[in-house]
Image (tube, rainbow, N blue to C red; front, side, top):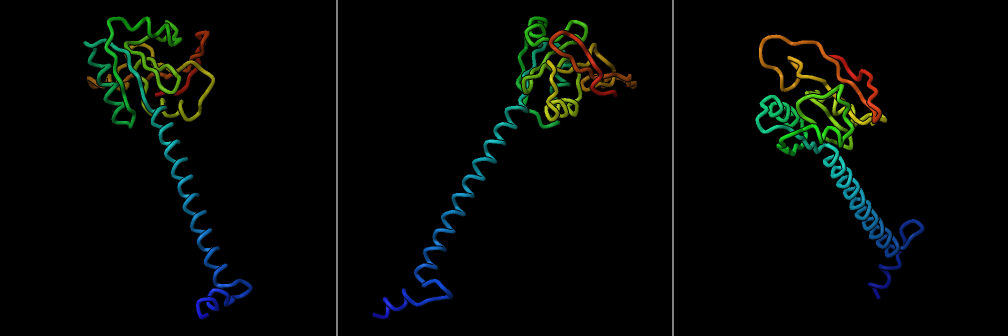
Length: 173
């Protein structure tokens, strides 16, 4: 009899039994919400990790390319290196115009990265997502990432290029 009374005693406009059910339901909903939030965060981290993966095509004997790879790794990118005999076919496949050719070609987040592009510019490209085929630093500019040998640092531009080969300045260094 006591048990029956306890269950039916009221607190405000609800019985204790109803309050316990509401608490149980709230806890269940909160835990399900936490699981959904965790799942969404995990999925976005997986997507971020996928867009941060850089595939580099370079000559095995090129030291400056290896230094650029290290620059990208230190900047938080995951880098997969493919040592190839000839970079030109990859450049062509990824839509890099001959006018901006350099010693290595990379692919990240669907964009081509040609030459010694600073990691900060790659991050900006991935963040802004412009309609373009990629960005490039043509040639081998003294002082650009991977080309820090020696004393000098030459000014250079990072150019944005589209599929037809048209270029515009993306950043100046």
